[in-house]
Length: 142
Image (cartoon, rainbow, N blue to C red; front, side):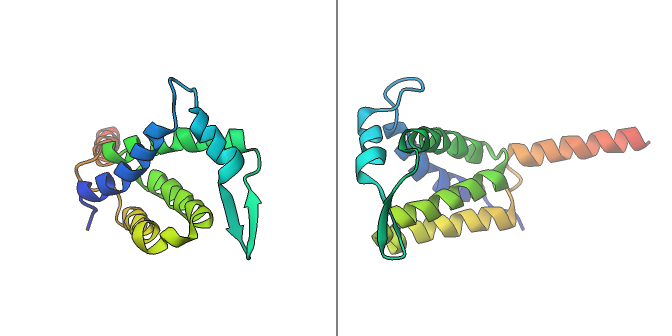
């Protein structure tokens, strides 16, 4: 069994939409994104609140990840890796917004885990590359 493309799209959309709000031009973070990571976002860990280490670097990495991994998911390229990265981002988001578990984080985590377990599906670049790779090996063996 493989994952239908709709699973990839469903996971990609909220991250991509968030990623679009992070930028104020090519590789230029918006002032609001910098403010959030420097001043507002706090990690809720063991009852304490902790700021992000290197918040400007983290903001850039998050902004890049929220654009790149959803695009890869929609294309079905590096699907399992992209889903794993978004699952890890979801875990960190859970630490920042602990009340979002039931409404947002649980469905995102479920979608990511399904994609990791089932793979990209037949309508994906991963599947196409895998078929191309197997065909090349079969020609080389014959």
